[in-house]
Image 1 (cartoon, rainbow, N blue to C red):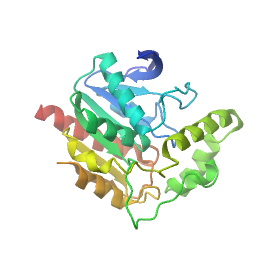
Image 2: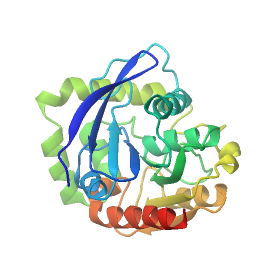
Image 3: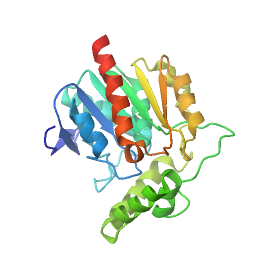
Image 4: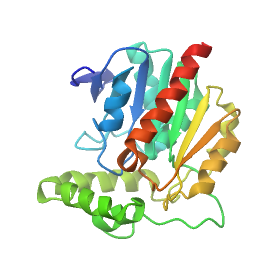
Length: 263
């Protein structure tokens, strides 16, 4: 497993910071706005077999807010430009939470550069009658306790990440999330009707105890995307990368391997 490097890639005049490691088939990993992500153990496991790239979303985690960013679809189009700018094809696109929402939106527009699509606890849909917690009600610690099923782990994550040193970045990330998901709340009413256009092999992974997007959402994604398959991870909330990174890595690497054999 190689060392992580960090570079800035120009995408139509915007410099996006990208962390990369590993060799092999390209994996583009799109983060959520929640949870301690980046070069975590899940990303490390992927980089043992693939060339993993993790861009910092424009306007998130200390990156400059571009004037063109108004909604999730803007980020979907941005990452299509990113793939084009880097000349990437045969990409295994993995999106978590908001990153899954972006990835699905991207794939409805143009999946020609994708070898596969993996959606982990993806946002973007709305199911009537299925109650959800609201990440915009309460502080950072309260939100973590809502979305992490393991209470002891939630305590540890809160202690490690909610510190005075991270206050400015956390505030920026809250503003970023509100810009994209405040209204309509946590979904795009137009997304579901276009999911049939996704023609990349699709894998949906969900936490059985997800309080933000409960388990029926995973079933909805599976049913809306032709040929998609669903795997549910037991005793896991909205952040499989945090709660069950090993299990998630095994599932995702096995799915990607099957696509490579099929190709």
